[in-house]
Length: 301
Image (cartoon, rainbow, N blue to C red):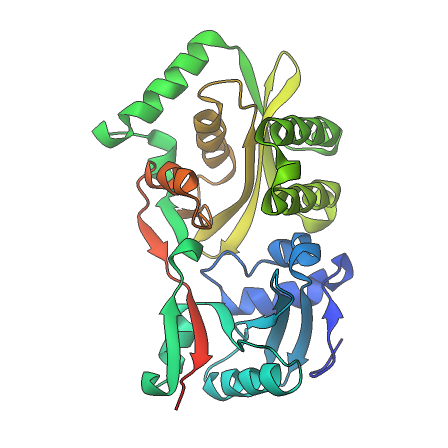
C-alpha cells in the first residue's frame, strides 16, 4: 500500500483495499466506486495513496495540471483539504490547486466558508431517480417514454439477459458501431469513454459488477453495466444501444432497473458533463434529486 506522499496507479489488484474504504464512506457521488476509479485511470492518470485515516486520490487534467478528488474517510477533513491544497501548489506546482467533485458532506466539514472558495460544478451533478418510477414509467410525465417502449415492442421480438462472458465480444462490437456513428475518433472525450468501456467489459468478472443486454435475433443491440453505490442506491456506469433502433435506450433502461435493481430505492445515472443533449435526456426521466458536487480552493487573501 502506498503511504502519502507516495502514490500508485489504480490497478485491478487494488480492488479489495479500495472497495473497503469506499464502502465504509457510503458515497453518494458516482466517482467513488472502485470501478470508476479503475476504468478511467488512463484518462485521468488516477493515482492513490493513504494519509492517516484517509484515501487520497490525485488526477491530472487535459492541460497536464494535477488536482485531487476529495479525501475519503472520517470527519473532520478540513485540515486534510488544506494540506492537500498546499501540497499541490508547493510540491506538484499546480497552477490551480483544487479539490474536484467534492460532496456536500465535505463542504459542511469545512466550517467557516470565508476561508475557502467553494463553487458548485453543475456539469458534474449526478442525476438520481426513484427505481420504481424508472420501472413503472407511470403518469403523464412518462407518456413519451412509454410510447417509445410500446413502439419498440410492437416492432421487435427481443430478449433481456444478464450480461455474461459469452456476450462481451458482441458488446464490444456494438460499442464499435456506436463509435463509428458518433465519430469517436474526432472527440478525445468519446475516445476516452471508449477505452474505459473496453476496460470495463474486459474486467467484468473481476469487478463483480452487474450488467444486462437486449438481444434481437440473438445479437446484442444494447447493453448496460452498474453496481451498488451505497445501501440505498445503485449507479449505472454505462448504457449503450444501437443508434439505428428507436426506443432501445428506453427499453434497456427499464429492463435493467426491473431485473437487476428492483430492490434498491434509487438509481444514480451519473452526470451530463455539460452536454446539452445528454442533459435533456437525463432531465426527461424526471430525476428525484441531483447530487451536488463542488470545486474547493483556498480563498485568496
